[in-house]
Image (cartoon, rainbow, N blue to C red; front, top):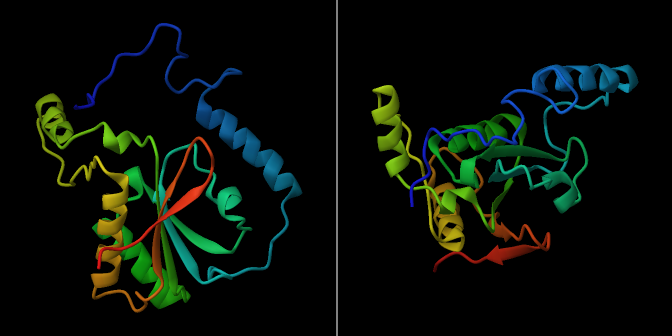
Amino acid sequence: MSTSAHSPAEPSAPVAGQARTGGTVTDHLVKANVHYAAEFSDPGMDAKPVLRVAVVACMDARLDLHKALGLALGDCHTIRNAGGVVTDDVIRSLTISQRALGTRSVILIHHTNCGMESITEEFRQELEAEVGQRPVWAVEAYSDADQDVRQSMQRVRTSPFLLHNDDVRGFVFDVTSGLLREILPTS
């Protein structure tokens, strides 16, 4: 099943970009930042994560990674994308995280009911038909989250750019229970 690159707005949905209280969503977020900054104090940290771990996860808005993993500000590097898949850009971020900022462990998190399970590579063809140019990136859709976690673990473990590949673990987060289920790598 392919998900259209262009979907019609639902009649009852707010106009795209509008916040519930008026103004754009960005206006609302910038206003929230003013309130945040008024109470902000420099935590006195540098960019090196305290726990020396990088977490790669899906960008899904239902995943509150810090709460789900019991993390505090400064504990980890968080790298998110559609599906939480290990792409060239994720390898780039992990390489910088390890080589420049001292992380040693990598946690990969996919989740149940992911949108990447309902999209296909046809999405790229639909985009090409709509805009006249095919994206250079792969969609990285999958139908089996467990298998995609295994593939992502393998990509991290075999990257020549990463210094530390001995502590790479993968999980699937259940969006209904909040629990992580560990995925073991293939032998």
